[in-house]
Image: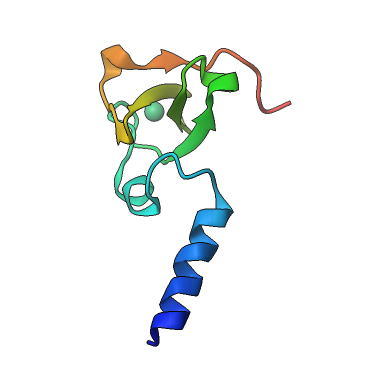
Length: 84
Ligand SMILES: [Zn+2]
């Protein structure tokens, strides 16, 4: 792989989603409660600066300094109806 192709790939990934956490972390992390995938959310939804929301049980885990805090007692429920 040329360095140009590698740079283009990294740039493309960053433009896909908000870079709250790295794409790698998003892939390896799962909700500790229901083991569903997580998705990044912004503060407008979470009431936090940034966070990761579980697609299963809708808990939102805070992200502090780029580090996801995957603790149940630190999570809050997403009580907004975001599906409709
Ligand atoms: Zn969950």
